[in-house]
Length: 160
Image (cartoon, rainbow, N blue to C red; front, side, top):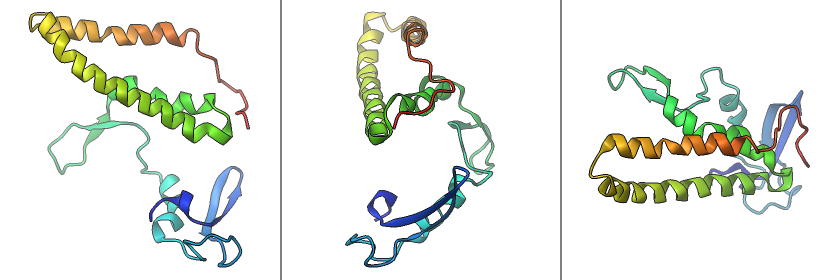
């Protein structure tokens, strides 16, 4: 078991930041799995989340394997980086995880269909990579058009 949503926890929060995570005392939560115990992974969760070396953006390797040289993955960030920043704010707190999960998975299915469609598109374009790339690049144009009508969430309090 390594999911914090299946553990009975007591979490101390100050100024919006986790200060301490510990197991709820045995017998106080009625939780049949943890019974006053949590693993180190969850007990140290706050250290990982607030660690200064935590990776916050998609990255790609730029040097030989093992050199640990990376740069922000420009295309991956353009295409997927906005998802965790924007989509969860559109859902009320009680369904935010489910709503964000649905949005991510719709994107995954769309990506899978896009891969299948790319083969057909490649055949239809006579095997021309530049033509296929130009047509696939239109997804960004579509995104620019759609985002124009998306709700602005700047400085907006999240729905409970």
